[in-house]
Length: 286
Image (cartoon, rainbow, N blue to C red; front, side, top):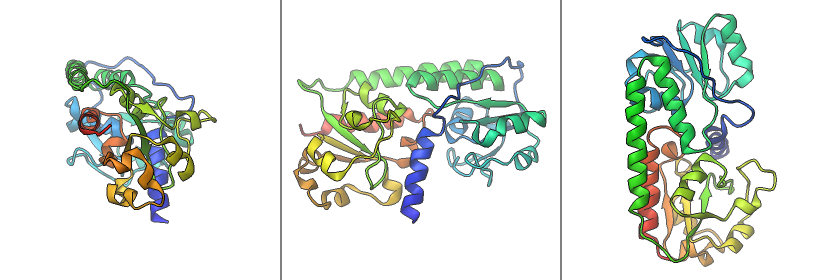
């Protein structure tokens, strides 16, 4: 039961903004919001990275980074307007308008910024810039975006060239839900020159299909990335799965454990995620 809950959460964190929600842009004062409630782990990381951490009065239960973030029992998945209002915020940041919370908060005269989900790295840059405007940290946000762009470009540039691109499978949970190239995480693997074996399986177009073990074994990916380490999955456990020893990724030792937190967010630690991907690709046995 706990494994299933964690799996559901992993997918929800990645797809929390999916749907028709789009980022909103509104004028912000030069001083910016001073009492911010963030109910988005990615936004929380962005706020602290641009120097607005002291303006954050409360974050949701999954905003565990940076460690000094004022974690509470507030929830971005089941937001409660009264509980949020009790923090007396002058800005609430969410990744999606869950349960119509935006209208509820605006009825209470509380400003709301819904980031929407990031589908590409450009969406991350746009959200950082918007949070900079709303918090009075535009110059810091601009500097952060420049650093992220420079770091990512260098990582990709330093990748060794291969005659044939490597294929990969990105494991969200042990029952083989995954993310395709159309998702934010998938776009990073594309930047690293990898080809996603799950793209053809996404007949519903959700970006998060579930593969069967038989289909995955047949697709024979060169690499497997585990984003479900929080559920106890490891390269050794993958090697022990029935029939998986025939997969190139397994037989050649190209099963890579990722930090589940970083892999589920589109904030400034995206550079850490890309570094883990690039390092694994550089070492992979073709």
